[in-house]
Image: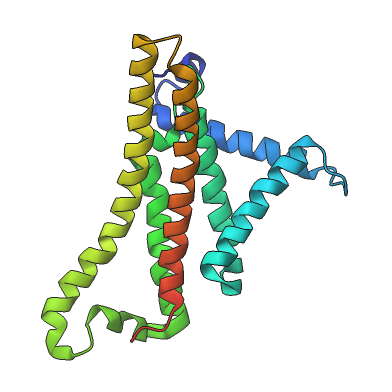
Length: 219
């Protein structure tokens, strides 16, 4: 199990995943400040890295949601940066990933869940709720439970998928490092880094798909 002693000693009454969340937030704030305090046409290292990541997120959002999705870019990019840094943090010996905790992931998934339905009502009015009834009123007793379950499963799947992949990867990495400390770490770390990036993209893509589907006309 990863530990970071100074965080636990400094905040003994606060759950570990919360202190790591604060650490990730502080890192993102610091890097954002350093990248934007002196913007240049020929970017430095930090500005170049941040511009590359943000541009990749922006292109992904446009490809997934279209031009109408631009208003959601601050949320999607923030979630993406937080998950990416949190996932990678767990690869550092002695550190933990905030995303290896169900509560952290659930908090992000619930934000996306509630925003999806708020956007749906805002775009379509209360007609948005007709999708839960089905095409015919007499199907309502059958369709309402099915639709409710299908929507409730969304934040649950977002939460568990991210948690399972990140926490499971850390466990496998720790076991392999103990068993074969010299041969396994490098290729496994590369594989784990790929998983960190992929799971970030999966969470972002599903979030964008859910929000985009709420903005579409329901028949």
